[in-house]
Length: 476
Ligand code: NAD
Image (cartoon, rainbow, N blue to C red; front, side, top):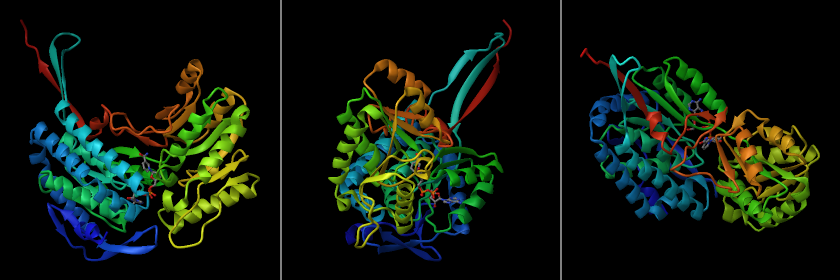
């Protein structure tokens, strides 16, 4: 364990060199509450130095052939897969998810690098004759320019990979600001990209405990051309307001409040299986975690019984701890408040003794309508179940939120599935499936869950600017 930690750079990556910070901060292991190591605490001056480096490298990097950019990403993918155990250990140490889930995250993140490595050579343009025939319309795509990439703690490898991959493929330079809880995996990922041949200055990394202080001057600086943020909706709103000052292009991957709908004609066993994935993956600390369970009254008894049995079979130490005490107390308070308002506690709900920030898989039924637990992102291993009796009722309830990231729908009736898929107001839908993450698919939300998509065929466009050239066609 200490060998893995020893190998991780602890400084700030600026212009291809890891430099120490003026101060440091402690990174903690959430399973024990103990310190893992100290990392440089970036300042506004460090952030501006990183922007200087990104700006200086931009033109050269944009001119590097697409195949060469793609091969850097492919090599980085291969290196990550070779070192999957080492990366998984690092994720487990600083974030808390199980080793199996951490390995799955490394694979998922690496696949984004591979996917965008392949996209680098498929950036196309168009050519056509203007409507009146007097001009030719040439449309090309160019890298948008230096980007600021801000990432959350819940997937410390996949979240930066999902942004770095398309930025590198498009020919952009960047500054990554990892979450302060999990800066180590991002630092190790940056090292892998350097080893894979990414030139100095293309990728700069500034860990910090003062996120707002370092991002504000960057967002005000006209050299920055793009902000891609993954995190909570309140911080996303704040950043969008700041980005308005320079009319900065933004991509926002924000919070969710996913409904998980089980219709009366669903395969209940499949729904329980999907619920386990959609609820417990990442200890429930996922933007795409199922947040509100809506189960038809005819199958609610069977679904709840089976879900409770499965949730109780998961040992809390195997599932992993929550990220910190603040998150754990927030989830515990949400459960206690819901029970006090009349819900029944069917599993879990009690904070275990001992070190670390563990909270057990928990099931609540009879959740009152309008309860805070149904309006807010739980971000923990808690399934809050309500029943419904009609399709119209459940569609109204599912869409009755400002969020619109993902929904899960279990039904075996094709016509019902098509009807409901069209009416659900979310950017992604898991139809008879509890898992939607896939590098080949456009990941992102509607409403206040975000703007833009990551991955899929359109993901690279977030980092490309269209340029249109009107060419006079002359006269015959
Ligand atoms: P957060 O919003 O608190 O922090 C996210 C990042 O923003 C961190 O790097 C943090 O340091 C930084 N930050 C915080 N305040 C800032 C400020 N004022 N200015 C600039 N940067 C600031 O979110 P979190 O707790 O780290 O992550 C959990 C949230 O992320 C959840 O809401 C979850 O749904 C969301 N999330 C969304 C997706 C998605 O793709 N839609 C994926 C993962 C997580």
